Length: 320
Image (tube, rainbow, N blue to C red):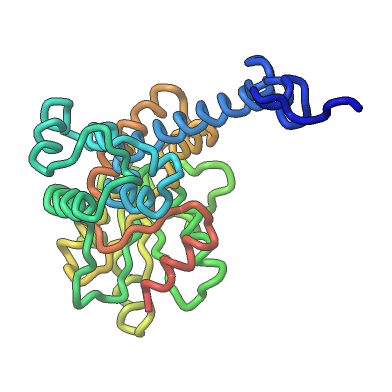
């Protein structure tokens, strides 16, 4: 009778209990998986780079990026190293970054999404002290000022409010620039020449006025606003940063709202895609946009224009 027992040294090499070992080539992930993983890694790096640009250009605050990272540790924001995060903040270079990390007791190899409770607390406190986020002021009036960087879509948001909220009066500005295609005098702007603009200034008929992009002048007529507020209506002013500051000086109770793009890259794309300016003008507007974004801390509220209807409803709610 044949011997079917297991040999003392263990099962035979080719037995079911001990199948042949797979070669190293068979244990490697399939080529398609490695390609997909590489693409995901590249996409994540690009998203982290875009987030850093957003912080550098002040499209989002460092606190907002930290909140996103803590809410999603596996996201590109959460995977960002704390060293990358700090150097994205304006005026923080590598030397200052290392001193800050040493002071806060945070290892430079930590990722934002992996910070412990103590590290989150000290980093948040540092950011709030260095770059405080806007806080709404009390005693605000129903005069709402909507401002923001060039090409952010202020006019589009204001037009949506005009169409869906007839109870809100939209102020019509005077300007010395020529009408763009589709713009109607008296509806979008009062288009005037320099002589008429000078007359309105001399007669104190403008609540605010400014020269924008070193070329054209814009101003807000006082009369219609005064009448609407006296009637108990809310008034929305869609103006530039210089004008917003003048309105605040004239009426400290005005509510200031800053409209933000979803990202810096999106703002650049909107400006290029609009196609209404040449290369020199686009470059000038981008430089201006950087300065304007840096001023958002002067405003009571910030609204992101990632969806026109949603952003318009958020602004309209602030008039109540």
